[in-house]
Structure formats: structure tokens, C-alpha cells
Image 1: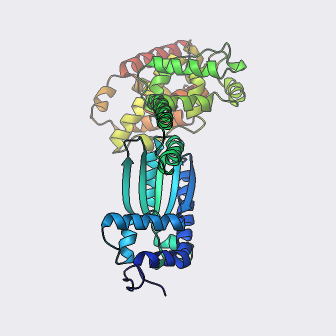
Image 2: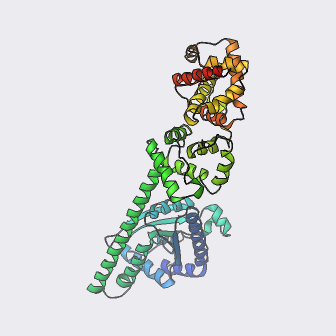
Image 3: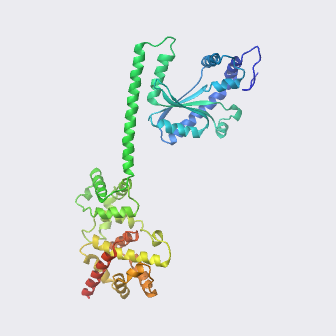
Length: 445
């Protein structure tokens, strides 16, 4: 005859005896299915989150279970009257032990496992002997019961113990030497256990210190680049750790420009700098360099320009719509700032200036001459501050913008792309470069 957890026992047979009989003949099958499912889910959850661990599982042996129930009954001072009273006191009939290899993973693993089940109770145990673990009492969720061919009435409580691997080994040893024997352990055994416990502490402290070092390194990776020196150091370190024969003898270029460029692209952490360098100075870089170098004046391609070129021209840069929104006035302010800044970047990267001035001279059409004169004039200052331009001026700006957009020369394409990405230069510097260029072109006529 089966008894429900709330049933009381007939007078001729104790509740404990009936509980043990039902466990042996019926419940043990459900406990085993629940236990296997819980252990499998624990493994899956922790593996999905890359937590190194090992698992053990066990069902209480019949004799051990009976002894524990009888002991609880004795401490209560009166007999159990229903199965539910036993289930309230005995919650470790089925148990899974999770030994995490990294001590600090214990808390994270415990939290993940609580979410994976119907959690009934969580106990953080810390005994004077040094035992530290988290015990979680769980039931399978309804959908997991279904996967095991079980119904809600078949759900059984499973205790999950989460402990570090070292502490697990020590607690097993302590259990075998202290609690399992009938007689008290000798002083030498206790001293031996204390020594082992201290070694466990040392090991966990070493783990903790190593994790702090790794955390510090990780934090540094996400720290913002503070100055151009950070970029120079990162580039130097990359070249030292991953030497490439073709790079030897190449000019590095302006780390200041690269620093400002990365910040404008929101690639301003050490980690992002490292990723940029890995991507652009990797195994394929020599072939790309050889191809790109033919499109620049001889000897003018350096590593900084090469990196910017790969990042911007390969992906096509950014359109106006990506960087500015608003009315036509705002868009034309943006266009003017980008075109004026292009000349400053040309002057900075490619000297002597006649290397790129000749391109403008060769294409010096009427609209280009008028556009350059407009860019070099001070009357644009009022427009940039909010005044409106004449329609003819706006049309000229748009036509000049199209000229830059469809330019084939790689020097101009790169510097224009840099400027379009928001790296604007001082207008006074731009005006000076443009006026000198216009003067130089006139002298060629």
C-alpha cells in the first residue's frame, strides 16, 4: 500500500518504517531520475558559462537514510506522524556535488544553478573546521520533469553542494578520518588535517592573487588611451612581439595622428588599439602594403597612414548621414569643415606639398578654382557661425564636395575620409594651406 506525504501511519507500524519501505520500493526510482536530470543540467549550465568543474552524485543508502531519520526523530523527542514531517527534516536523500576548479567560481556557479531550477532553499555553510560551501535545495522545473517522463507528483528534492575542488578533497578526508570512525581521531590525525587545511587556504589565496592580477590586466585592456605615448608603446610592443620582415625599415609615422584618429572612431582603449594593430599588421599585411604603396607617392606611405588607409578606404569611410543630422545648414557646415580639414591633413601627411597640389593643378577647372577661393575666404566664418549663404555658394559647395567624393587619387581619398569621420582641423590652418595652394597653382599658369 502506498502512502502520500501527508498520510499518517497505522498504529501497528511506524511512520519511519513505512517511509523507508516506500523509498525502497517506489520513491528511489523517482529520486534517481530527478538526480540524474539535475546533475546533467548542472553540467550543461556550467559548461555553457565556461566554469571548469567536476560533478559527483549519490543517493543515500538505505541504512544511512534510516539511521539519519531515527537520529532526527530522537532529537525531536517524539515520533514522526507523517511523511511530510520527514521530508521537511531530510533534504539530502539525493545529492549532487559540484567541485569548481577555480575557488572564486563558487558564487557564480551557485547563482547560475539557482536560476536553472525551482530553488527551495539556499544555505551558505561556513564551519569552524574550515568547511565553506553553498548548499542549494532544488526541484526540477515542469518542462525538465516532462523530459524525464515524470509528472509534478514525482518531483523530488535534490541537494546541490557547490564547493572548491581543494576543499572538497579536504572535507572528504576529514569525513573519513573524523566523523566516520567510531572512535575519536588521534591528535596526530587532527594535526595532519589542520596542516592540509592550511595548505588548502594557501592554494586558494594563490588562486585569489592570480585572479586579481588577471583582473588588473583586463581592466588595463579597457582603460582609455590617455596620450599619444600609449599608442606609441602599443605599436612598438606589437612590432616587437610579432616581428614581420617587411616592416623592418618602414617609417612609423605620426602616432599623434593615429591617437586622434582612434579616439574619433571610438577605438580608444588599449584592447581596441591591440585589435586594430592585429587586424591591420597581420599575416596579410605585406601583400596589402605592396598594393597600396603603388598608389601613393614613392616613399610617402608609412605604418600610420597604412593603418588608417586599411580602416577607412577598405570600408568606404562614413557618409555624411552617418555623422551629421539636421537641416541643410548643418549639413553644409559639416561639408565645409570636412573639405577644409582635408587640406590640413594633406599638408601634414604628404610633403613636399607639390605632390598633391599638382592634382588640383591638373584638374583646375573654373568651379574648382571658385570653390578653393570660397574655402579660403574669411566670409565663411559667418556662415559657420549661423549666417546663411547664397544659393550659388551652396551649389558650389555641393559640386566641390562631389569632386572630393569621386576623386581617384589615394592621397586625397584618404585625407578626405579622415576628415569626413569628424577629425576636423583648425579653420585658420586650413585657410592658410588653401591660400598657399591657390597661389602656387596660379604661379604655374
